[in-house]
Image (cartoon, rainbow, N blue to C red; front, top):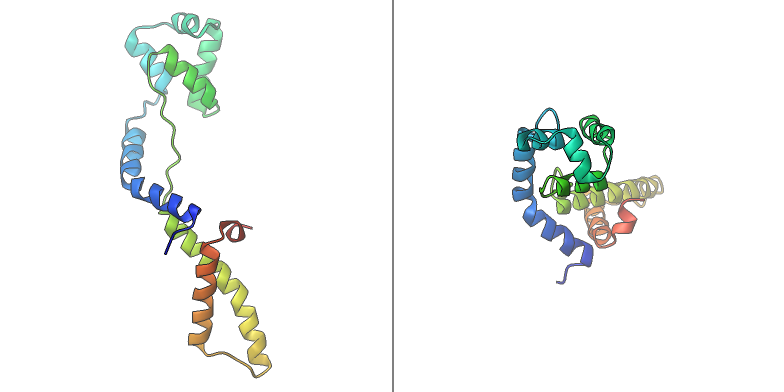
Length: 155
């Protein structure tokens, strides 16, 4: 059976998750309280005026850059520019908390249950009820179909 494009992509990311989580954890533990820009600048012996010259901005703008990093309001583009000025690499990642395939399967089952349960209830009221096993089978079948159509999952 051939996986759909989004499931194949999710599987590829899931394979990388253990390494990504380990790297993210390590980076989080080693993040300097003053921010990476200021920590690197100070470690290199640069003043904010010297950093400003490297960035082709005023010293005040270099100070503001460091402040915005600490405040969490800095832009990705500014981080890239600062890294280049400090002869450093900029690394950016969003690391999922759980596997993407697991998230997709969980959401598909939730949505399938939401769709099947009212129908099963109505059928019971009309004396055409399904057994619990039949309902569970219907939920699993619908969930399986929903996993293949990601746009339907997140509406």
